[in-house]
Image (cartoon, rainbow, N blue to C red; front, side, top):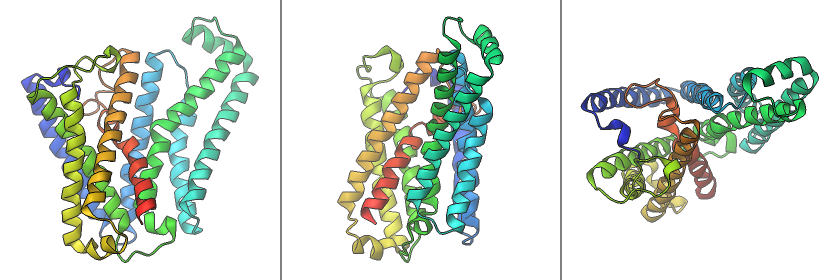
Length: 325
């Protein structure tokens, strides 16, 4: 929805070229995933990369806002999430316990980092001197640093663990569907996210409307972009439904009552939550006084600039798969 920063022709060129490269890379990972039951794990590599890159971009934003974190804990959390996933698959543990274990790790990170901050008093005082105004007590500084660390782990790493679950949906639910429901979930997730982003961008530029009247959400955000993003997700959901029906999913869809109406409704929900994710990420960037999370992708910004809707939409798709199937 934020179109102000992409108006120059050179930036448009970079955006198109690197957007096409991202799409090719994504299709490549989907193709590799379908080779065999073992190559399904290759898609986890992509998810893990998004976790790590996105998490360190959030940490960088926190640093700009003078919110200190423990970088070691932030970097280790995605690795632990993947190892726990492998453990759950190997021991045939359901997704519920996987989520519970991830929450337990977050609690453990909070407790350990808080204890480190409280015990290492001299180090904490030095960090207070260099990173803050020094007005907080050592206890309050340690508490804030631990909370910031947990928040950086939650967004986006913990949210992206739901993409892990979608990728291994049949295994982690112990239900055999006859078709790869995880594939459907992943395609639906990425298609609705890309559809929402593309339609929001095009409609925001092509249809001049009143801007959303809240400066912290970004000066270039318009209502046409918001509505366009939701419509884009709905269109993408219908296209996915048609494609999957013609690829052997019709019997399963009919058996579970997944009609075109429910698909469009799910697309509507995905579009709404995509826009919520986009607005929330823009709010964070405005608080930090920056337009992009990083400059990792020329013409696009950072990894989080591209997956800000996906990390929220992942929960919607995960819950939808549970309810429907």
